[in-house]
Length: 248
Image 1: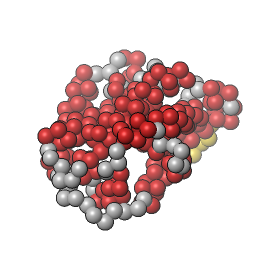
Image 2: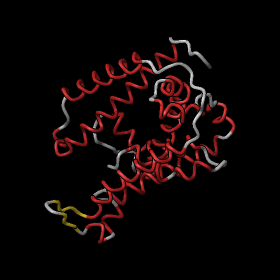
Image 3: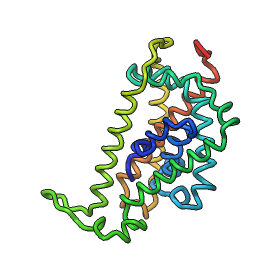
């Protein structure tokens, strides 16, 4: 799969629209991969299907968006490296629950657009999809030195790198906030690292089903991202509950 956080590259231009929720677009563009992260293995039975967009992806996008804005956002932004911190500072106090209550329709449309972009991207870069099965040139192989792969594989890896570059470029262009409260906490990242490491090793030591052994690298990557996300969620929740913020 393309790296999950490359997917927003496709919908970033739409975040400038006042009729669409930027949170909804970004959440929708990454949410299909969250079935992998919940399972802690490279398996998706629901999130990458047309029906699953409505019964799995949409409800999960609402939940993830609320968790991010209510519990994760402030502690995470306050502890990001300077480059990211000054650029995300402007959204720190955004009242997303109130926005969602007033503009729920805009949010839903944005999630659906983001999710559709994710599934279409995957459809062009994965084996056994509708597009790859029906577009002959995607199945043709190209050889570069010792590497001999079908075109859709090159599209997979190339679009992943390009997408991540676009996302980072877009972040670099974001307006910087001059005022930043406090300093990043080493304790925050120590807790994240401890929780993430524990989850990662518990999952790896448990082992993966035999049917997934051919996806060993993918499983490890999914587990790393999953463990990190759970670590950030848990740590940020603890900070939100027990640590008084310097500014609300």
